[in-house]
Length: 577
Image (cartoon, rainbow, N blue to C red; front, top):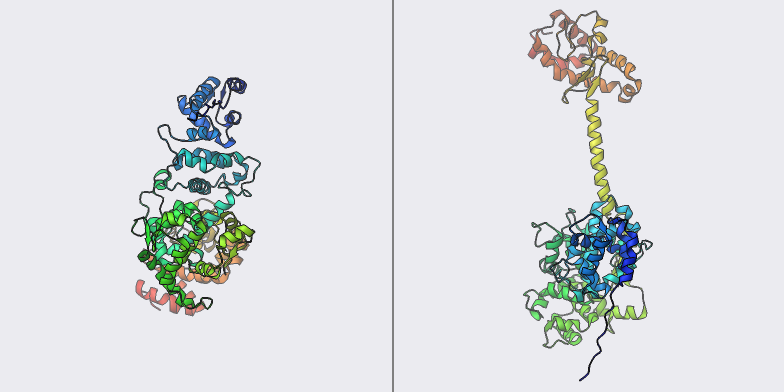
């Protein structure tokens, strides 16, 4: 019988170290001031918010903590924890849970977004902050191979979250890192989604997803992805949209999809694609299921008429080839265990039934696995005809895509497009306000607010009478658009033109010359047409003045009189000419 010695567990901090922290409390510390304590406790800098909040809950939800409150809370947290990883896991998880859910990581990501210098430019862009947080959280669960959304201690350690969080120092540029905290990689994912999402509701329909990588995936595969490629538990914890279409991909679904599509050789990607292609959910990809996926590949094969292949490839040949390279326990029936034996061969298996272009490349490299060869000899990733990387590691793919996005002027930029929408709304509001201001006419004695339906010509017709009636020797008491008068208000067009010039000379010649004389002539004609009926029915005008106006119009503007006024006069006044 072999006896293993009992290892003595050393506490994370000695009592002397804890007592030494009392000098920082004066006598309380707030959340923003607590960073020095967090770092002294060997925790990552950006665990400060999560650490303070758990102590805050243990001490009756106080906004500030004293040294004794910190000391009591520290002893409660570390009583059964002997490693930093286990301590962080306990700080993040809910009190009565034995696992972490996606929302448990929110305090850490909020701390990074609000306090890291590299992300200060997102301070006023709340949507981008939320998308960045969601992307990093989803990638944490992806690296831990946890699609269920319930991260246990073993999976948490596997994700290397603590190590990665320790590397995120304020001096580190989050653009240059190649970890799940990379802003560049988040930007690539979000731009890819934005370019596919035609209505920008963060939901991808089957028609949206058909445009992914220039339509590389077949229709049947797209349908399988939208039906069985969902992360249900992520929807429950991070969103409140209960009306989401079940046949659409959410942003979390898309993150899982694009990571798995870029590198199908990883264990989590193999699980993802197996789940999507397993139509009946029996844990076996049978020849019957695979034949339905190959049918569309066969159509593409005949459409492109590829001369590089020795004749057309038949489905029976494909199955024999897959049996040879995968070597399933039962020929023609491929299980998840069979595919996980060799990730590189599993990628070739999936590409055969999903992506015709990659299938062709695999067929042209019969001597071995393309991805393994490129990694072994450190070769540059392959690209397709559109410059899209093929068989590359995610970090390489993100770098190439980021450069392509920056160089492609036609590539949709979600950040700029959202700003343009905001600026457009502001511009429309300012334009509407300017338009409304123009409806208010300032006179020397009072401000007259005209109805929006009044034409610009009402400026000349409705001034104070001392402006134009006194000049004609007339007396009036009208200060309104329809006041009483001793003569007809239908003046000649020439009269209005003179009054226009006088008015705009007083207000400024620039506006008059900008509009031009013809503009006001047309306005006068339109104004006659709209106002004549009202004036004729008022009955307060002397007929001799009316006749005088008519004669003036006949003599000076016969065409205007015949075409514009004869119909109105014959219908609305007994006097004819």
